[in-house]
Amino acid sequence: MNPLDFSDGINAFYLVSQAFALAATICSLIAVQKSKKVQLLNYNTLSSLCAIFHYAFLGAWPGMVTKFIATIRNGIATYEASKNKTSKLIPIFFVAFYIISGIFSFNSWYSLLPTAAASIYTIAIYRVDVSKIRKYALLGSILWLLYDVCVFSIVGIVAESIFIVDDLAAIYRFRKKKKSRTKTRTNNNRTK
Image (cartoon, rainbow, N blue to C red; front, side, top):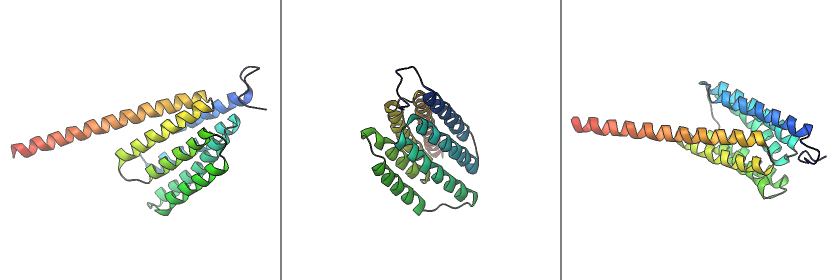
């Protein structure tokens, strides 16, 4: 049974997949509101777990495998954050794992999009510079949006669109705040 076969209308598999996509989106939106890194990562782990089922019920195996690996990655990142340490080898390991899984789950050009998005995001979360994290996250969200269009996940399309707008707004706010601080420092230096 093809979960995307809509000849008899929208099927139950598709509806269940969209419910999991909605749950994943809600967890992601809650995560960005958390001020503590461990809480943020816990919600990201829960979001990835829901996304596994989202893509499984769609029959979108490359997305499912990528989210499975992301769940493990987020769990390890949560553990590291709780111990106040960060491994330099973990991101390399996961990017390699994503690439290998992308090769094995390859079935079309767009099946590589989750691999690229997850690899980019993995690099981003292990970077210190917040402004660069947002840019990497934006690129990852664009790739996930393209994938969700290709597998026809309506909730996924809406969610990634929201994340893209949110990332762009954060980049704009950060850039505006940075320019304001630079201008204030320049004016303060001139008055001295």
